[in-house]
Image (cartoon, rainbow, N blue to C red; front, side):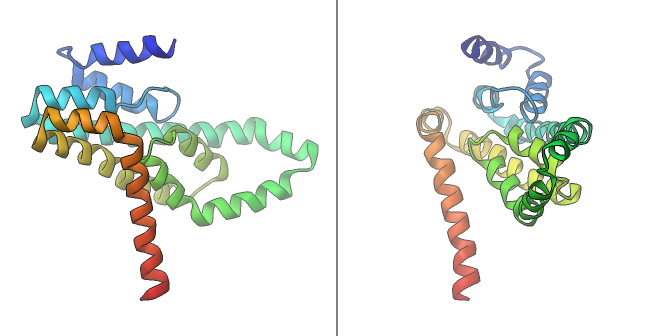
Length: 193
């Protein structure tokens, strides 16, 4: 089934309504869909490099709006189902401790999930579940998804097909390296400066 979804999204990238399809895929990927929008973004930018920035913008905006849907799913499902279950088993106090911890570091969780291969939908739902401040969630999401999609589009715009092969081969490692460098930079600022 996963292969069929993957093939379907690749086919959409060549359609005349591909930008709309990309927006739809980016939107639903942020809350429920298993295939990342990058598989449409890459061939679309390569096919129309002059539209790279518009394609990245549509992908970013739709992904963040889909993240809000994921947030709402976490928020609504928790109050309707999750909270009564925690109360029934006496785990509500432990969840409240987890919620406090997550909300203290939630902006980083959202950002890291937004730029890495980690499923962003998990963090969008968890953010709603824990009641992470919606403004913090939105700012982290816009920054993370913008960095991710504009970076990929920029590389494709500048380098073309050779970078496509490189990104597809090393995407996971590139994302991890970026996060390590980012966190290392913040640690350096915090502990050295």
